[in-house]
Amino acid sequence: MPVLTKRVYEPAVPEDGHRLLVMRFWPRGVRKERVDSWQRDLAPSRDLLADFRSGAIDWAAYAERFHGEMASQPVSIEALRDARRVAAVGLLTLLCWCHDETRCHRTLLRDLITAQETATP
Image (cartoon, rainbow, N blue to C red):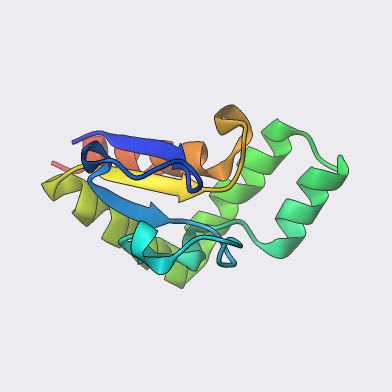
């Protein structure tokens, strides 16, 4: 099944399937009923996010470091496995607050989840 991405502030629709929040901190003004689960271990570290937001690193460096974080932390590795399991049985929508989907870790995460799906026999 496909993995979709969406802003957490967009209205939920049945076509979202399982709505997984992938932010380190709970977003302001969002009721818990608007998401099905929350996995903060799939969010970038505070340091990585701060470096990107300040302009200290560009998108390519951010993506590389994010992939490194996801591959090196046991809790993130397990969280990726869990997300893959959810995606294998139904639709999964990754939620974050970012406006620009092309410059958001949820897009990188979607690629990691779908790459793992295709690599599994």
